[in-house]
Image (cartoon, rainbow, N blue to C red; front, side):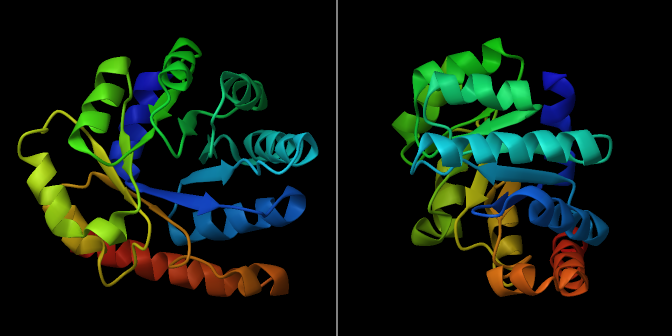
Length: 217
């Protein structure tokens, strides 16, 4: 399973980041993104309370039960081993974290899920890599710029970097050329107001345009 998901992320390159959208609304969003060409989605944990965290788990479960045959779903903002376990039970295939937490990386690999911790410096990236991380979430990418990816990719060619933070249709190709193997994106695919208004066709069109730019560049 883990090897297949790693390859899917390499092939698809785009993970849609979904925060604060749950239940049926999130399922409709997933359908709109899929229609536009995105086949991977991260549902982020809300850290405010246990109830909000459980809502994330329930949403991941709903997504995997309804669309797990055509899309891959993962959990984001995972900061504890317990959240790794909860995500696994809900059907998550990959774990994305904001930091380099070795225990979270080890637990993710042990659960046969793909590990994508956050890291910024070369030391953090290598620490995560040697701990078993499959990809490195470089965040915030837009604060560092494509040149940072190019500089780091030269000595750390064994590290698969995902650019996350401020990526859009105007910059995605620059990060791609600089060495990013994939991207975590949100705003360039959908706006919160589009989701609230149920403008699913608008989301599909924006997603298709972004994917076209990436695939043709």
